[in-house]
Length: 228
Image: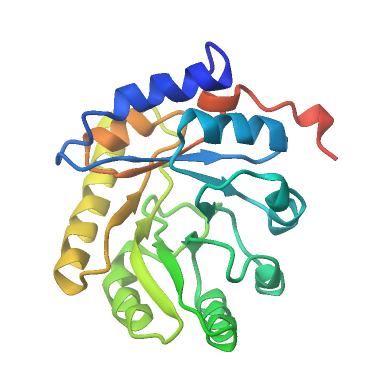
């Protein structure tokens, strides 16, 4: 949780990440900017975050032009009719969670003469409340999407369940790391395992995540009372 200003929080995080993950890989710091002002996001960009990421396409559309130069990611559930707000502007989609989305993102990418970088979202905790492909179908999905024109599969994303059982959580991250390591043997384009948010990024890094998506650790607790 936030203990200082945005700049101080980013610098503290970057210092912690300096040694990389358990595999000696650099860890990408993605600022989750849901409900944050352009001013706050720009402060985080100036402080050195590696990318900024929105959850909602409309929020991305409304803020994007006001933001400083920094890679833009998308980390939320994406409806196919909202792709038009993002196409060609997002460097990495973390949440490719179903066939309908993959097909439409590929179609619009081809129509715009570009290739969209995606992470395949895996529901590693088998939670009914979360989207994503099952772990058991992940390899088959990887092969299929990896051969889909208009898409470039860069790895996987997953969210851990909110559990107190640290041993179980570690096992889930290890499963995802094993999947990521397998995928790297299949494609030279694979480079990201996106796991870890403000409450669990330390554990995820220890077990091999190389992308974390943090919001409150940078910006402080969100004030949902002011949400429009």
